Amino acid sequence: MTEKNFKSQLFRNTAAALLIGFGLLCIIGTGGGGDGLRLPSQHRISGTVRAPDNMLVDSDVNDPGALYASNDDVNNAQILTNPAVVGGYVNIAGTGEPGRSYIDGDPKDIYRVTLAAHQTVTMVAAARCPPWAFSVRSF
Image 1 (cartoon, one colour):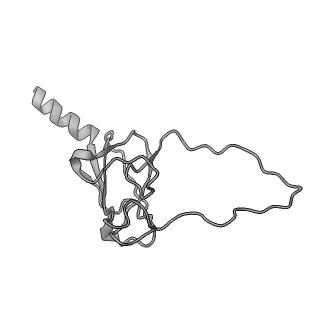
Image 2: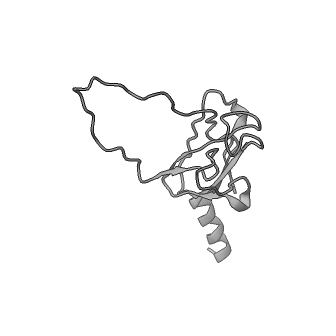
Image 3: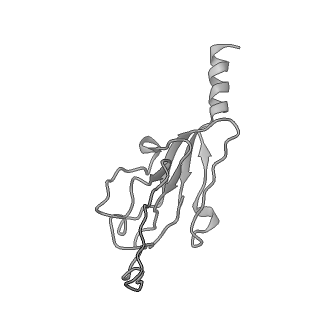
């Protein structure tokens, strides 16, 4: 096998993929609110909340207080570990909660991840997202 064929086969086998999530996680206008859970004073809840090590966050969310890095084009694709679970936010201009992307919108997020042969990518989107609003492409 020539070096060129080997590299071509290696690329296909590892499926260096670029996930274009136009509406990857159509989470529009989510957020908490209210006073939280009220319990009688004689009860207490304690514990630890932990996120999995492979939980990642979209780098251009709507929160103006969050760190920001554009991931809206191939040259600025957000690098993901494998495996990973990504929580994100996309919106069309003028929709969703007031914040960083309310006026101009954030209609797409682009991610880059290296996959092994036969690995799958699963995307879950809010019910308000039409099927055409997201896609997965490999390069």
